[in-house]
Length: 423
Ligand code: GDP
Ligand code: IMO
Ligand code: MG
Image (cartoon, rainbow, N blue to C red; front, side, top):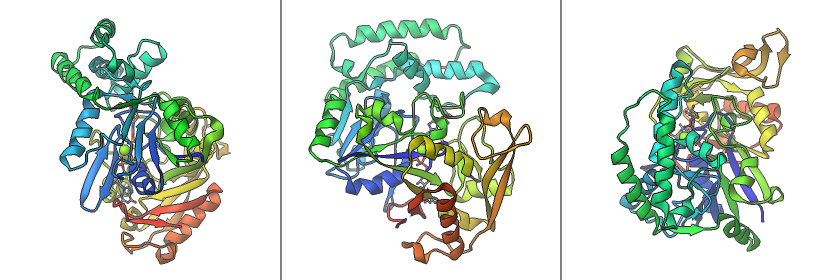
């Protein structure tokens, strides 16, 4: 068997949670391989809505193993809160949830540093979710970090204190920010205590053994390819490799074990936080997409910036990820507008036309050339087969397949698990 992968192809929030939850019916194992509680993956089952931050989106299936991979960063406070939230809704997820020992821990002072660093950047700020992601990955690569496995060691408090002292010295170079460290620390140690009762595994052996047994595995991406630390719109990115390559380092599986790569895109595009967004809308269309698509961040509640789907951008990440299948979400939202567009080419600053993502989107792109499509009036929420879609919607999907040279295997027409068209 192989490890299939699902990755976001834009700047995050493409609907990964919904699609992974749906697909998890057919997989034995779902794993997160990177990122941390900066993610917010929404799942709607009937009239119940859940937002997951660290727990993989296969958790609602009783027989699915859910693994938090080695490449993930875990905040014990958020993690335990998430587990308890699910408990309160009647789901005991502690049996089929596994934590990789080599995942790194987010300390309260990582969050403090995240906020302080953003405060110093002022107008240049990344627009971080302030979950401590950047500082935690910095400590990982700087070889200072604490790992999930350290939760089980006797000297955790001592090592915590050492790292905290380092952070506090570092914080003194930044502006002062309001942060109740004492109270956050108390919550952190309480959560760590609760974590000790969970299932810890050597993620890499655990997964390779499951692979050898013939189990089907899906790796669930967080964020989106344009937020990748190397290939995204640097520095307005997150601090992990969000693309398919991150699956190997994040889970400890070999590149030859990768199977299908499912890339997910909205029928339009959104971005939350700062950074370039060539097809961004500042008019009524953007406003309508935001309202109709309820484009508010699942983690921070911030308004998401909205714009048209961007084909050069998608071609770039389809190449980087090796996408074999596309999922198009939020097609239903386009019913709210009379017409919509797809960005086809960039006019670069030197006047030439290009279908490639330039070095710096912000300064290197002058204009975007679009194709305009007439929308449809019908609501799509009840549509369950491709043939039932209005002709305009079908034509748009076919256009995407042709332009991106990749088949669309799934179309999503609403937030609920079943509001999906399988092809
Ligand atoms: P993720 O981070 O990629 O899992 O995406 P988020 O959960 O942050 O954001 C996607 C939002 O769109 C959530 O509120 C979903 O419930 C919702 N959603 C997902 N698919 C669809 C769809 O096809 N149509 C509509 N209208 N909403 C959707
Ligand atoms: P999911 O998995 C959308 C964005 C932040 C910010 C930048 C860096 O739900 O798609 P960070 O907290 O990582 O330092 O923030 O990345 N960002 C996301 N945007 N969806 C996400 O996750 C995101 N995770 C981080 O808004 O611009
Ligand atoms: Mg999200």
